[in-house]
Length: 399
Image 1 (cartoon, rainbow, N blue to C red):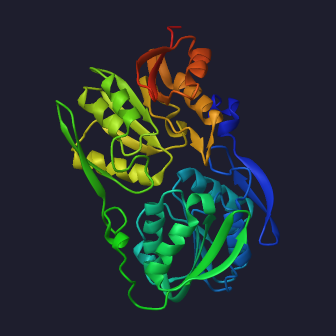
Image 2: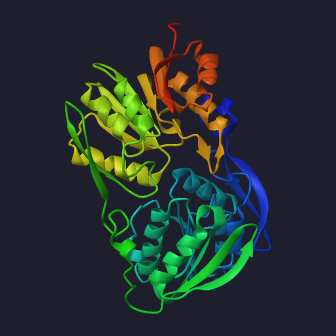
Image 3: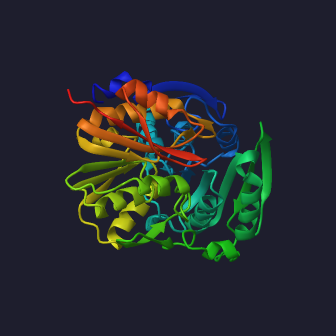
């Protein structure tokens, strides 16, 4: 970890101990993950009801920083546990967790598509739902194709995250459902793969959900027309959001500038910086589906001077320097506004900016980023605003 990053609790990995499935599990977590310092009731339900056999191939999807994977892997003798998540940070914590517990039968899968070697091979899948229904549907469809005949999917989630809707989707796909239990506003159900082909609900052929497909749309400027591809779970995955649109309206000629787009999503800010003559553009995001979408958009639009990195805020580029940092930042960890993330983002931007460089970001009017920016940079100005958003700018003074 870079010395600068050590100043912030946000960047510090922490060892925690919680009980799950009747066992006390040591695991590694950090701020930036939903429920980073606790285990959600949904994940606890998965631990209580999983009961794999010693030889099972088990796939954990979106199950947090690794405590559940340790519980599962420690019960397997010849079996293996595969872990997938939508956030690279969750996978990083899981890697640290299985090293902490000296386990060698946990394997990290960072692919966003179903790996071919898993098709019809998995005995048990444990899935904790996301807040995106279409991402859950994508995972459901991948689960059906991954399960061996007779294999089980255990699906859990909170009522206020839409678990009842996704249970209906699962029943449509599998043709069966068993409700197994409830805990603190969450529930868990089981689906069994009984046939050789799934039913075909209408949602299973939606672009971005169906295997090998993207949701696509166009966005035009006077200078160019972008063909954009995205996937469910990525922020505003099917249209350009109003905050980003307002930020783009303030970007003029960036000739000769080195630009960093933080929380890049499918990459539209970085792409706009590219066509506005930036010398180089780096884009970073913690979300694996956003990274995949951004890479696809660079390819589709034949962009040459930009690249994208999987990164927890700016951890992957903290050794670089830039003249401009752009961001439509994430301000939630789960359902709560997280000012710790905002503080780390703004301070990290100050650290990577060259003297005279600028941080420019979009913020909801009710989020008080301007105070953080003024405190760290010594200045802040409003470049544009609407009733919902404002564009804030701070300059790093010459030393």
